[in-house]
Image 1 (cartoon, rainbow, N blue to C red):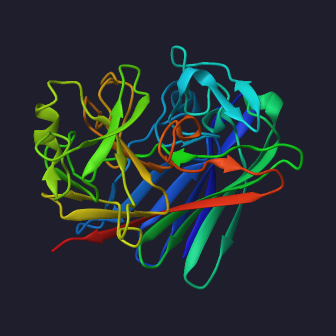
Image 2: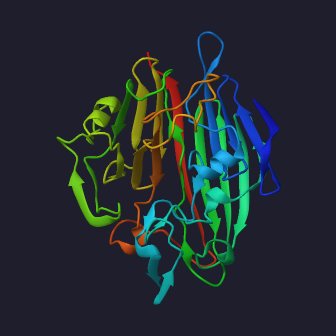
Length: 348
């Protein structure tokens, strides 16, 4: 197992570092300190080269312009009207998506350059990112110490652990997620990609993509992935709008089962996702110009519409303003930890 580090560029006069972890099977992941971003998930090909299962960028400036691979928080997804009520107090945040707050706001985790360390055990290696997030920095109540750990083991599993130590004086919110975009194929679209999501229902969203509080059964719709289904066909049925849905996962009796499986029919590559969260945001990248993003797996390969799919495990969006969507309150002086595991295998 090996850990390497290299200079990735500069951001606001601070050096951005890229950390690469490689296991004994030749599987490797890379992260950069800007946004605690997951940039690479490389797996061996039969010809000795490696395929990158993630979309990525070449420079810090590109990551600042587009949300691809970063850790988003304190709260992933939207908070309606950029406000919430907690402990008999109303909190108003700075809206960055119309009147709503999206992905932690304009000063969320994705915009920060994180401190890092590394560690190793006999069977795993980790990149550990940490920062003090202050109320003055992002507008949420209280100062919290956040730790994000990417761990790669010899079972070809990547686990992301998100932890926060709460402020001693005030409760706050904590619901981060990863904005990694996957493409398991060797081509520039999702035509051969298949997806299974372990749920029969998704949230009903209004025109601003805020949950109404109701759920919708997915059976008989383009968004039904209860069985492995072709993503390309589902995208055709959306008339070019793509997929931007919140699925309700980990229902009764399902907490020990994977929440999703992503597979490519042509290559046989498969990633299984396990999570302790009750939501899975599914978003297909459908508005990037063809010269803005590049796969690292093949020089010169450019991304076009619907080339990647984000599978964001999190507590259901706008949970603080909804009944029974889950508890995202980080109690004063308390600690919360969430984990998501991605298991790679080559399907026969």
